[in-house]
Length: 232
Image (cartoon, rainbow, N blue to C red; front, side):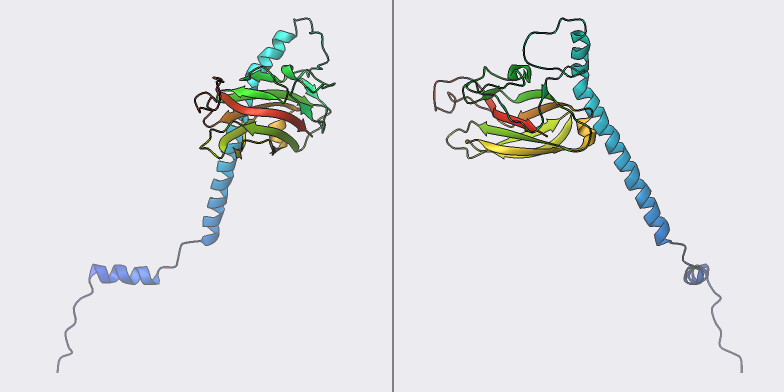
C-alpha cells in the first residue's frame, strides 16, 4: 500500500514559515530613543526661531540707540538704558493719564508707535497696532511680570474685543477686553527679557471709531486704551 501523496511545499509556504520563525526585530526602546531625538530637534528649532524674532523686533531699537550716541541727551527726567529704552522703576505703576505726574519717566518717551494724544484717564491706541518700550531698572535675569491696565472701545452690539500681546517678538497671549478698565498680567521668560529692555506690542483685532458705531462724532479709529503699566 502506497503512502498518500502530498503536494510539494510552495514558495509561499516557505515564506510563511520564515515569518513565523524569524525573531522580532522591532525594538520599542530604539523607537522611543528616536522619538526623543526628534522632539529635541524640534524644540531646538523653535528656540532658534524665537531668538530670530527677538532680534528682528529689537533691530530698529538698536539702530535708534546708535543714532543717540552722537546726539546731545534731551532734557527731562527720563533716564535711558544703553540700548535707548526709557528706564522705569520696578514694581512701581506708571500712569499714562495727563492728570498723573510720574516722577521717574516722561511717559511720552514710552509711547513709540500707534497712539493718539494722551487724555486725563490714559491714552487711546491708534488703529490696530500699538507699541510701548521701557527698560526695567536693576534687572538681573529671571522671569519678569508686567501688569497692564487696559480698556477697549466697544460698539453697542459687541461685548468684548480681542487683542494679542507680544514682547520682544515673543507671543505672550490672546486676551478678551471689555469696555471698562481691567488688569492684564504678562509673564515674560528670561529669554524674552534679555538684558531688561522690553518692546511690548499690542495688536487689536477689529478697532472701530465711535462715529462709525453711532455712539458719538469721534472719528478716530480706537485701538486699545492704556491706563497704567508696572513691571517687576
